[in-house]
Image (tube, rainbow, N blue to C red; front, side):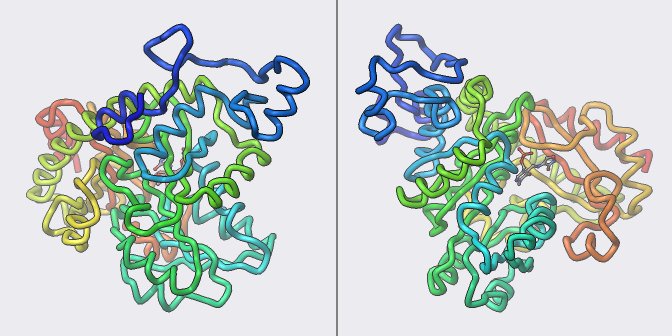
Length: 393
Ligand code: LCS
């Protein structure tokens, strides 16, 4: 079905446009590594790109292409490139856009490995990087160099929930000929479309909201133009960070309920954020739906909803954070996010424990910071669980 002029939920259910010869209701799993040609001419046409036929799963597979088309349509881009993980999507962009002698600007509180790999591996290839608080536009402007090729944003950022003005940064980038890529993992295309705001590339860890069921790891890059799509697709195909057909099937299935899952998790999040904001042991709460969020106005303009990620600070610091983690019962004490179950984690004693105090402070990670990915359980149960855990703090 052509879903071009259909609404968001119809695109979620019917997007991709795959037509099965046996009229199966869902796109089947083509669990095959290779595809046979009818004859030599057909093989030649496939390699020349003159036939719709498939060649080899690393290059393309109907189950994976159905997912790529659906996400590209949801993000209003030319084409999607499915990858084995969110980090594979990040590196597909780095490898596709940067070259020896070029410079990248990144938001200082990116998901840890997106920054760490840029600072540890890419200098080997003579790529320079500067990480700044991109929520303040003058920092981005001041970081521009003649060789700046890429501005890499994550908004809202992990785990600080800082929000960057995508439109304003895209305007700055256009003036200097740099490409803007936005990691849209925290919002998903339901809440934010960076390409419509001027970005050139959008990427996702589909491990999170897009799949939504905490049962796979997957990534996606969507390019705005055909030229950019071809450039990045060739990186994925040659690096070999392709998706697997079974992974694509599960992700496509999870994606169908994206909007109803986020609607519910978001309604829960607002109640949880208000509860936390009024709790005596909580020092601060960062949630884009609260007026106290420093970029509340921007969130209202740029996002269609505040999402389901909350960060909050405990007055008791590191010790309080660990005590709270030890006492949650309903929320799973786990990393990752964006699934139907509520997850809680304490960066200072877990994901960011190896960072120096200075590096943690620079990335906005205080000892008492707790990150919550709110699920679709009953809001009252989530709040009761946090309340009893906070009693032990
Ligand atoms: N981008 C963002 C914003 C993320 O949060 C993550 C993973 C990635 C990229 C990488 O995606 P992956 O390769 O894991 O699919 N975030 C994680 C987190 O906050 N805890 O565990 C993983």
